[in-house]
Length: 203
Ligand code: ATP
Image (cartoon, rainbow, N blue to C red; front, side, top):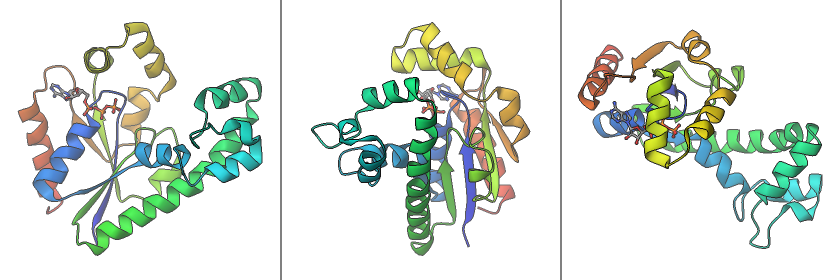
């Protein structure tokens, strides 16, 4: 059976870069939890009919996707709406994740990487599905600099996103494997750490 690896880290830590290395060098199949989650509420997404039923048809845009601004307003005035929304979306994400993992398994992938930015925040839900959790560790200042450079965002907005995520220490406490990609790590050093881990796991 393929090794099931949960890959997580804060915004800008380098998850996608590590996933890319694992795909290229070791034939890993990547399951992108954020992309799957977004697709459930995009036009023709699997969550839309249940959302319309639970919250009203006005939550759906004319293009058939979730009206994210309307949903934000609703969650702001009624915090329980967030839990109800998550109760709709989580099982759908879980099903699609299983489907993609089964397809990768059937295709003979030796490694399936679940890229889950909020793995630590989601508690045992994700932890239970994977064999190992890999944390891409990065100091906060480097995270902030990378996200400012990549997304052209103001610093205070990046700091706000970071404040809403798990802390570096909380993430490290959940890690089976730590890949350091903070200040002073170039891409060659990142790749070398990934290779050491891969050879330990016989990949
Ligand atoms: P997010 O959660 O925001 O999607 P991420 O954890 O997937 O981020 P990446 O997209 O892999 O992070 O990396 C963030 C940015 O930093 C990218 O532009 C990437 O090219 C760059 N980067 C990552 N690691 C390094 C490194 N060691 N040296 C230089 N640049 C890097």
